[in-house]
Length: 420
Image (cartoon, rainbow, N blue to C red; front, side):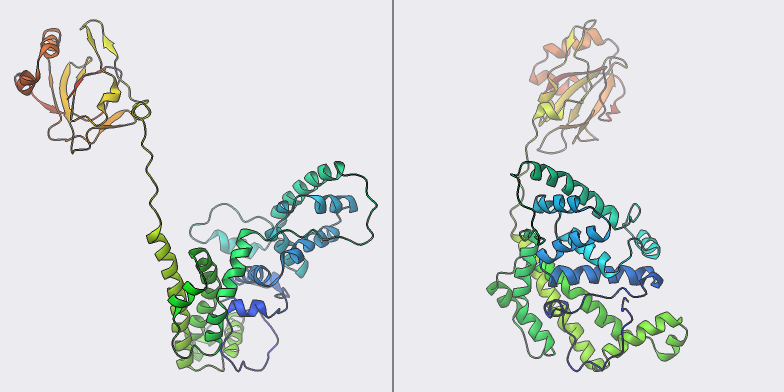
């Protein structure tokens, strides 16, 4: 719950506006009065809402000009500001502009309680840094590039009026603008109490809402849904008395803002927002379902077996290994370990054949892939080398030693004799 303290006003007489609609109305920037005393979760949510305010309701050119205003306030020289203005527009974008605007409004550079809250959230890593740690490196790079640009320019008469560098809207800004336009009818439906039915599928199709637009809109509608759910779960007076003064004050402000709505109205609006978000999720799911699967790149056999360790030849036994690339896709591969005199064969587990991963053979049938100890390896391997297809069928069974399961591993004492 992140409702900031504000002066009490008359209860609202209409259904709560959506976040997008509020942004279009040109409301004043969020206040930071007393933010040093806020709890971490309250401050964190207020930062998100303030960033969303500037992102949805202030032009990029105005945000960029805020960077230079912040630089002047921070004591940057006139030449440094001039160089930053001359830098390519992409070096100081909307995000840096928003951060500078928030600092000018009174946001703290670093809020320890927020850092503690953020670092305690599941899935976060590292430490939260001061806001200026993001701004100053970007400005430093812009000044450096801007000086290069100025050196390459012909001498010009210094302008008496400051010139704002207007950066072209980014792709994300264009998507957000299109999403807001497509959401106008939805906003009107919500603002009038979500009366009657609304054909979201037809509307989103007619206005060209894609999954990119849908994600932007969900991010705008979800905070309002969360707030409505909080109002619906308002603690009882008895439970409120057990809370601290700050929490009681927050609940009181939230209750006052929605005092014009009955429990039935709240339930109806929660269902309405859930329906809107559900319809937007359908747009995203449909796009995923229709997305063409990425083609699997076939890895060359030489690349697959490059880490496989094996013995190229045994001079004593006069036996040479085959090229291990032949193992890929084979139904069977005969092997011999020169150190332990183990002779056996790997049998593929399915029609895709044997394969290799790192230094091991994979996709083999563990019950059929067996080995035996050779008592006279020189004679038996010579006989194996001369054996034809018919003889190979019974060659392994004719060895009169105990059979053991193979484990898939290969080393510099392993010879690959033959594949079938």
